[in-house]
Length: 79
Image 1 (cartoon, rainbow, N blue to C red):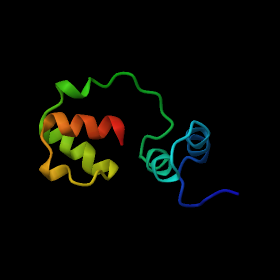
Image 2 (cartoon, one colour):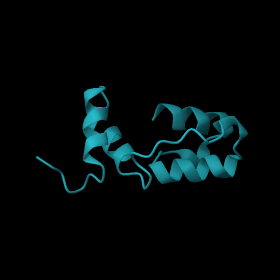
Image 3 (cartoon, rainbow, N blue to C red):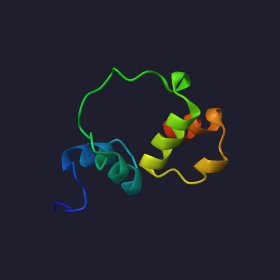
């Protein structure tokens, strides 16, 4: 049954099938550009700390204000 709070239901279901938690799958499927293929983004290491912080804020990572650049990169890749 479709969930109206999930913007990209197909992506959500695919992520759940891969073993993602409901929360993480929903967070990814609800990003504004969910389901779009990318590949043009530069690696996080080349981002500024401010940009990493803003991305962490966008995806809802807690504790981001106390993180250094390396910790922000780790959180973005593993959250």
